[in-house]
Image 1 (cartoon, rainbow, N blue to C red):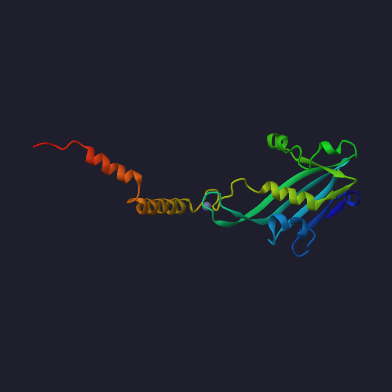
Image 2 (image 1 turned 90 degrees about the vertical axis):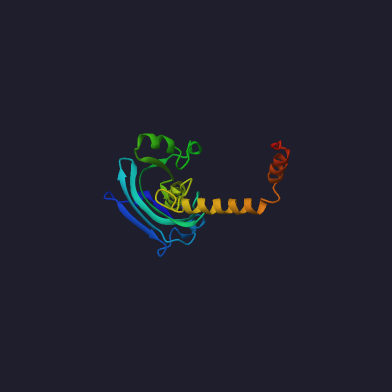
Length: 187
Ligand SMILES: [Zn+2]
């Protein structure tokens, strides 16, 4: 889904994509599979660049990093970007989100280079969703909801393992040997 920036009027243009309209379906399959999504963009000329604001609403299938439960993680994130038309030369030194760490520090809008006046909305949204994916997904907000349950299960399993192992445990027989070696009290 490419947007020709030269066609954006002075007052800006709104774009709205979802699974029904289908423009981004194939581009997003690898990260959200068949999940519904809603992408809204407003692009406005800003000097010799373009300002873009928008929001991505969707969900990702994840596994809780603490308890291992499957979960559908909601993604609902706003963005603000400056689209800058980059000349051909020097393009390889930039990545779509090349200045991510800098933006993280100064909280300003980040810039996205655009090639030949064509903004690739599919590529941008794909990258945006991929970056929204948490490193350690959690089934609760913000903490794991099943942590106690998971801990208990683990303790139960450990106890069962110990019980089954009690008679054959090398430590158990060692205890017996130690007992037999204790000096007997004389009366
Ligand atoms: Zn969890």
